[in-house]
Amino acid sequence: MSDITQSGPVLAADGKPLKHSLNRALRRQKMRAMALILPLLAFVLLTFIVPIGQMLFRSVQNDIVQNTLPQTVIAIQDWDATSGEAPDEAAFAALAADFKIAVENKTHTRVGSRLNYETPGISSLFRKAGRKAKRWDLETDGPFKEQFLDIDEDWGDPAIWRTIQKFSPPVTSGYFLNAADMQLGDDGVEFRPENQQIYITLFKRTLFMSLVIMGACILLGYPVAWLLANLPSAKANVLLILVLLPFWTSLLVRTSAWKVMLQQQGVINDTLVWLGLVADESRLVMINNQFGTIVAMTHILLPFMILPMYSVMQTIPPSYLRAAKSLGATNWTAFWRVYFPQSVPGIGAGSILVFILAIGYYITPELVGGTKGVFISNRIAFHISSSLNWGLAAALGTILLVAVLILYWAYDKIVGIDNVKLG
Image (cartoon, rainbow, N blue to C red; front, side, top):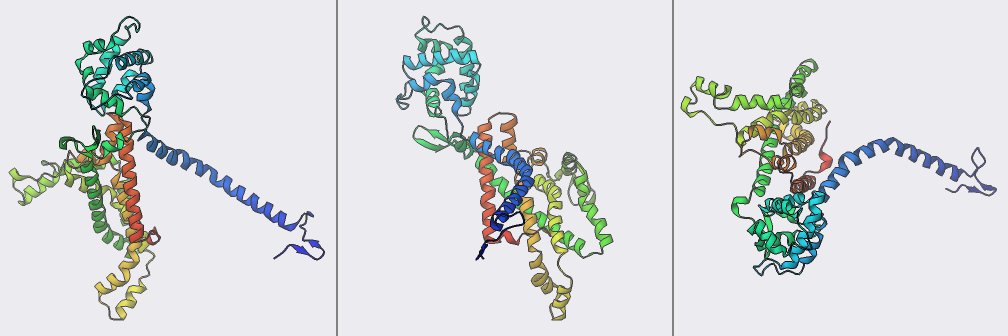
């Protein structure tokens, strides 16, 4: 439709062409809409996108070696790491010069800690050398190879220098290799010794136990949600309060309560012994293992499964079941072929919610899981708060994020994310 007539363009009330006035009004509407969502956009950007971006960057960042030991990095660039001998005097002299500056800036311990993640023992070498380096005169105290060997004979070990050479680039795959129980060897990427391979096991355990917890929540939550959806409103509201009651109690209190109940001298074992189901000398071990983690986390995450299923079941008209029965269907057939398919979107929403929450839990597994029931998230928390190996923690977190996205994609392909509803 054109805004031009035989007598000229159609004009608005202000005398301007109608098309221009409409475009200007649309621009104003878009600007107002953008202004309304801008605070939310900024919040998501600062609290979600930026932290994830920093995590991804930190998982490959490795500029500390190059920035702290620049002359050493250049000196050993052409050194043959397979020669079986330490570098020549020039490399030691360059290391001494770098140490003088690093000690003044108090950064030598940081680079030592970074390299210690790859080869244990380097951190102590850097601390020892740092105490001596502050008193060196670079013009008169040479040759520095002897000086370093006097500090510690391990400075003559080619493995130490290979580590410095391998991790001198500003970007490294070392953190991701460690997260996959691998390392950079002399001949390229190789698996770590079996006694050091823990992360693949933790990833498998995390995925397996999260799926078990999700399945347990479905089995326990579906009957409860069905009951809530089919009871009169007054009774359903009372039962719904009981479902929400755990939210009013601290997570630590709920987890600690399970720790008390599941222990060998706890309430459950005492009850089983009193009933004669278990001998007193054969009390069940239900804590500090996978069983304890599954039980405690199922209890904690169960409301997150019940609520989505309940909200979807509320929208299913009871007349559908009555119609199916009037056509000759049994109670089971009417439920399975009429009611259950309509409740699947609620199961899908609850499953995604519970699984994603479970895969990232670390407080409950830490308290009740022992050594066999902890998740990969516990190891991430350890590296962030205790070992301070933030690069490895970022790599583990990135792998966990990618795994969740892949599972989400697979779920979308198999079930369809459009079928997920919250009511």
